[in-house]
Length: 180
Image (cartoon, rainbow, N blue to C red; front, side, top):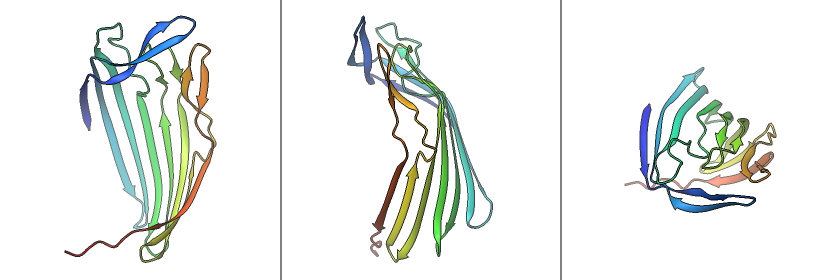
């Protein structure tokens, strides 16, 4: 899929002072443009196993503004993103999934001076239906415990790290569909 998106008057953080203390203000920013391509694919190894992957390239930039930001990259939009998943699904047994996500480096500010490095994380998910409508699940996010930066605060800059491994477990009930 190829895409072209123009957003008129997006609200964003705009730097209005860069002295010893950085001062930013939420403002409408003229227009941003995003040009890119998304590729997705899936391959069924067996009736119960599937591999899938996706890639996105996007060039998101300030297309129109009353400031000197024209041509700058839109903050927090990586140029490249890659995802993949391996999934086993057998309705009589369980669903197991392992996923990976890669994000290229991206800017964290409107001036394109603070760079968030690239990162890669993996997640796990498992679920099993106990009885009709009741399912138990277990999930692990960032299972490789990657401590990647998700925000930089100037002037130092102070790095804010994403959370470490996160585990969730629960019981879900799906209400049956009403018959018409």
